[in-house]
Amino acid sequence: MGLFRQFLFTCFALFLCNYCIGENLGSNIPSDGISNQDTCQLPPPDSFRITSTGYQFVSLAWAPAFSGAAHHLTVIATDTLTNTDSIYFFWLGTATNYILTNLDSKKSYELQMRTVCPNGEPGSEFVVVFPNVGTILELVLGGRQPVNPTNINCERIEYFNPDNEWVGFRLTKNIEGQQNIESLFEIEYLVSGPGGAYKTVYFKRLVEPNILVAANLLDNYPTTNAPEIQTDYLFNIGERDQNGAFSGFASVYLVLNDDFTFDLCSDLDPNGGSLYSYETLVADKVLPPSCQGCPPNTTYSRPQTPNLNPIVIQNPVSEFVNVFFPKNFQHGLCQFFIYNFQGSQISFEEINVPEFQATISIDKLPSGIYTLIVVAQDSVQSLKFIKQ
Image (cartoon, rainbow, N blue to C red; front, side, top):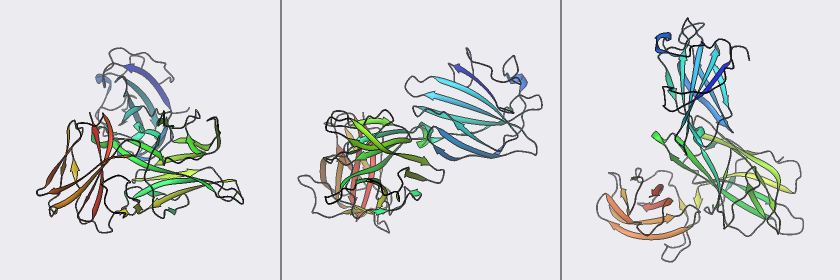
């Protein structure tokens, strides 16, 4: 392993270890452990940053504080279910980049980078990054219907691009002499955690009576009885037979980048003449929801020049959702749509908003994650809220 050293111990406090167990994997780690007396005040490396993330890994880079400086990485992993912490130490030598692997999507991470002291101990000064490796990915039922989606051929996707009202992918089974079978999947992000540090990514399959589905690595796919299936950055696509058994024909992988873009690609050869095809799609419009009392049959889209600054709601909520409009809101009639986790619309309300705030009653909704779509001043904005 060369200059690489690893030492793991599980702790009951975030930064101080009162009781630890672990295995010493290196010979240069002090036998008496790390103490404040051993540290120095060398400046930490500069520009410590995340360059990319992917399936169970995160790529790191930094610039040394001075020529020849060696570096030390502390990884604090928090189990979000048990609220317990594990601390990992990595001696990285004079390298200026590193790939941290075997990360658990059920844990959140804090990464601390230090310059190594002359005595071999890490310095007391450090810089911190919080990678989005705490991302939870779910395969679920539901989703919106895009209007004239465009195939972008696995190009990097700007998720927050206003032209990308809908982002997803399409599976097709090509049957000679018959109508092809297609399944559409919408991708949706929910940003959560401290400072929006963590994300939940939903791959929402439009509920259609066909055989093409996406499944996790255990071959589990969402059904009416189990509409939410957890997966990883890599999952399978394939067919389900009449008995419900899954048979995969390819995989799809998601890579999150540090510039608010992501890659969504498949290992299915687009030029291989396969019975199946895969397309990464974007669309600037979606079909309106279908429900009693909904507005006329028009498409929803994000205006090229939004007429309304961002709308804000508070989270979490219990009985009401308070919607706060920006200063350039001109008052008047607004429409409010609420979708559940599966992408099905469960309510519609049209309110004449005379001031800069509207209140939506949700006391009858069960606890969960919902999407609120607000249509006001020729602007369509989508917001998430959590009902406690």
